[in-house]
Length: 638
Ligand code: PRX
Image 1 (cartoon, rainbow, N blue to C red):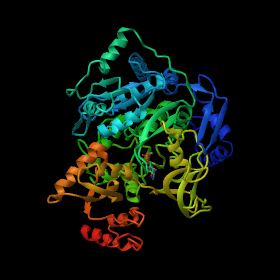
Image 2 (image 1 turned 90 degrees about the vertical axis):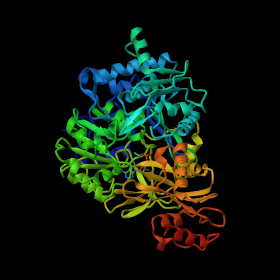
Image 3 (image 1 turned 180 degrees about the horizontal axis):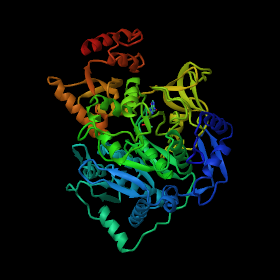
Image 4 (image 1 turned 60 degrees about the vertical axis):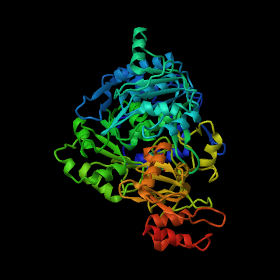
């Protein structure tokens, strides 16, 4: 039975909806958009071109996404849990925030932001652990019309400073610290380091979590709790949601690419809202009242779209988990499923592989019978992990949705619908309604027919497509819309099977996918090269049992290599400082030269083969400036 008017419940319906979405996108999305709360309806559903690019959905409409995520649910389901929060330490009390509670807190914090000088259109950087206040801060920004820029807690001070500078963000919301497994991460202290390079920051709001000692600078730093008290004393409660244009930016999220520094992917309001909601309701076949648990961090797009905006706009109950899957033991996810009777679990292949490694012991005594749907995201899921997930977690009765999408796409693009369209292990299968994928060869020619592979592009716009890269529209154009004419280029390769199902094979550009996190090799090389003694570096990915891809660094090092392990540690430390712990290389090999063409280009293809131990297939080396270097590198590896 349909729980939402636009929920698709059969393969035939999917086919029909898909056809309509491609032939008549205006009529298709216009009908869906009728189900949301608008302050003013749109004049046009859609106008777009991929040349500039300029994409506008629901132009002329006015809305606030938080009215759709909160206010409109208050009367009907105000007492239903919006957020269930599971703390890092299972001994600590969990928290439940109903829709009414969340609404109240978001309004309060919107007042706090306003009192601290935040205005519509201001970028606000959020650097917090996974606590309900993170969700509250994000939604309060949206309520006031400020543009949130959430930065994952695993990024370094330098990375934060880069992002603050890029967005000229004058406001920060952070915590004293964060608990993650056995670690206490000193978030405020990292922010303090970042701020040395960012004197333009006016205000830092610090939420109490670990209550480690923190420095609080007069006139700049204030405590979250004290600011809330002020709002209460003033008797400020309801906060009038700022009317936003459909195309007003909702948030910036920085992501790595194949060149330079991370870019600020900008998403706008109405299209993003409609698309995340639609994909949430359909891919996962969400039923009102179900408990939805997405294990991602809100610092990534998956958390934005499927912990917050998708579920909350659909009136769902979303679980926020502060900790990690392996602490206090490798049964933590299963404890959470059991404790809250989770119905849908959405996680990453890297987590599944790591938990598989602990065997079945951590599953003992855990009741997983509440599970109805499983999901996978972030990287291709290998068949072994798929079958383990299916057999041991889903007990063979839960459809697994393999959802392919990206920070830039905002919502799920290619996936099966749980129990509605067929699942194929390791295959994302069919495009969501509204998504027109195609495969192209190196020359930009579309590859027709089935049982083919090529570079994955999208030929038509969809509501939650990236609008620009912050303050640098040209970069957006160059990165996504210039490789192939009139197409959005994903950077991924894919195969289309004999029935038209898409199987994503991985990145075709110089971007690595490490534990489901995207890291550009250029960014990594820049960080390596900053280490004193490193003359040159070349980074490639290699198959890694747990992470999917590991980071392999070939380095030319000048200086004393008497204790290479210590030097390796130093270099890892440098990368950690420059980018963050998530970018630590897994392997470092010191070499005397790199395989380069006569024009000086590093032949990564050769290095990739060496990193994979596939020495027999390094291929033709005759075009290299110095072919002997390849033998040397291989010898150094063995
Ligand atoms: O290579 C694809 C991979 O993750 C990339 C996007 O990374 P990011 O923007 O960080 O977003 C991750 C979460 C949406 C893609 O270009 N990827 C994502 N999902 C899948 C995937 N690869 C294969 N199968 C998937 N289901």
